[in-house]
Image (cartoon, rainbow, N blue to C red; front, side):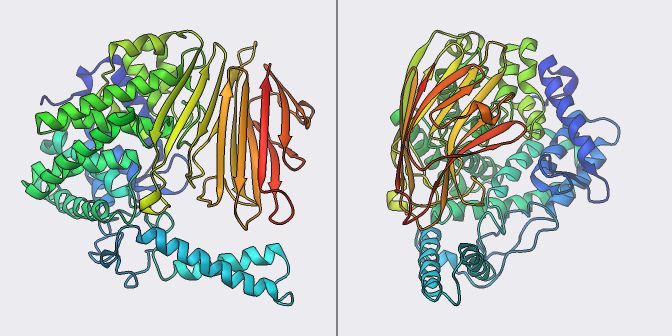
Length: 561
């Protein structure tokens, strides 16, 4: 493998590196030797710093290598070395986080699904506790007080058992191990031997812990983490001549391929957020893989992923249609690196798709691994290939559900029109708030782009949480979107449509008709009367479920003109 030198890269590759590095240079804090988070100004970011170190070594300007050494050491200092704990080998997301509790959770002694069963058990205990308090009106007679006590109860649990995603992020093992793999492959000659040995020691901890996580299935891996896990066990297995790791990676790669080929789709389906990570890691499989079969599996799956992207892509709107199994934003340029790959593939005319967003730190890595898409995909990325109804099935992963019943067959439908896309999902039982089962994208005659998505939240909370007992079934035609919602929960829930775009006011939204720029929508709703909230760049149309007061079924029929 020939060393990648910035000056020898294509113009598009150089742009990705220079844009990313210019931005991350501005986030660098010299005292900490780490960069700040793109999304949370003032918070230091260990994962982003690992990618910054890679970019520094690639750029190789005066002082870059010296700074990269400091950054790598700062990232290494944030690793947990706690062999008996579930967070062993992962990295603090930032230096100022409080360490998770220790010594109270013998997680390796429990069967797969322990996290699910613990969570469900404490939910039931909490519910019983709340019911006892609720029955005594002198103790607790207001919903706000009930919620406050519920939080206190959960906080007490979190002080004893390390709560995943709150007190630690297990995925930082895989992300940082991937960044270090590229550094060790491409730029070992620029680093002191002692630092390389420190990195290798840290990677032995991280990969061994990643293996424990996978084999125990205590914390399930979504697709992007699964791909990274298989890569790092393969890469470091060969680097350290570890036969067990190599055998594990070979077996997992074949299993992943077989599962992908059933419906030629991922569990983490139709996600601009995670498809960018998937493409990056599959390119790493091909560039840094040490076995022909491993590289070939990467090629097959990468090609299949590009075919899925093309199927749901609208070149006029420069976006993927919903529905989304997991996503943060509706726009591809908002929380995704897919646009970077399209830019590398199609050239300068598409540079705007690679503009800075929260995935900017991946620019140097994507420039290094490059792009390779099937030739039949190119026309779909360049021009609208005619109005079409598309349908794809996938087997989802419900990461917070019982392992024996957390893989459901889902159907994703989309209408891809010239200026409008509609998405609808059925079959999902996912508790994840990042799942958006009913979506619309459109463009007004003035060229302004808009999007709509249906989601849910506990009253007063964020949509990006896990909530049980809420299911959606959606279907569509080329000019309609139909949704059924079932709610089996003791919590008050907002079911709401979020509409993003300019020039939306309360006058645009009536109970039975939404007169939106570029879209007239007749609404039939079997649901409580809605409330409307207007923000500078989006609006919410909210239908509130109150247990025991409103029906636990809602239906919506949107007719589009």
